[in-house]
Image (cartoon, rainbow, N blue to C red; front, top):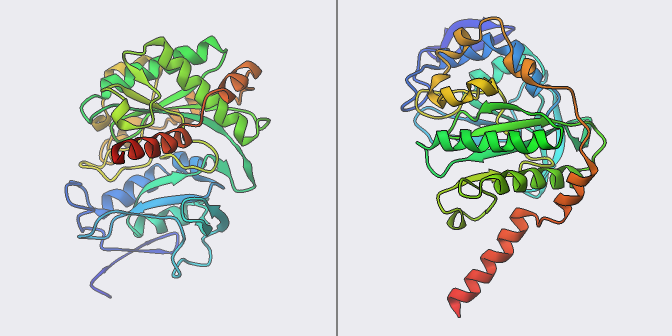
Length: 319
């Protein structure tokens, strides 16, 4: 037996180096990661199924890195799909993590974080959820992100819409709003911008839609840029952070009483029991109000606006 091989296998996947530390500061081993992901598989796989997947891996003693393109040694039974990646300007062969075997293979590859797209592989022109990412100004300001999430919920309620909420597993909160397959990408993006703007108007001292950090003034950034083929951390996914917290679904009524560190690879399975709160909290797919889409189209795209403003400020500094 190879010294790196534990002698264990599941679903035909040989598991190696299980008792090694996962990463510096993790307070967890690779075995802890494998056991958690296998234990939560029936809940995380529906969030990953048929969605082009990016993962964040951590090789022992190295910095974490994001993997989009599957490596050459990927087993033939791992399903893949080719998608255009706008950031790298090339076609990328993404994995589809549709079954326990593939999830275990990723876990054995030290894939800690799971970032699926908001589109499915068979319908790349339609996102399935609007996502509002509530990003507080610093790591100990989670309570501010929670308050901003309640603003988003209020803005949705005024429109007759509902969303589910989860911790990001980092320092913020995510609100997911399931939508039907009618709106094209531009309309979905517009609706997301309009919801963010409405949340900001409800409490402009707390929330901001300013894309550039220097313009946020210590407020919570209501990020509406998770649109199109972009990715977002999956519910139940671990994070490469001290203690290995996980992105965890929370009932709206409990949101004020939790903290990101409450949910980790060591505690989350016990807290879940037999439940799947993310599925339970997610309402049926909803139709976007036409007035919301129209309102959003009048709001500049944040990244584009920030790019132009950045160039303007650079010219002003040079001049």
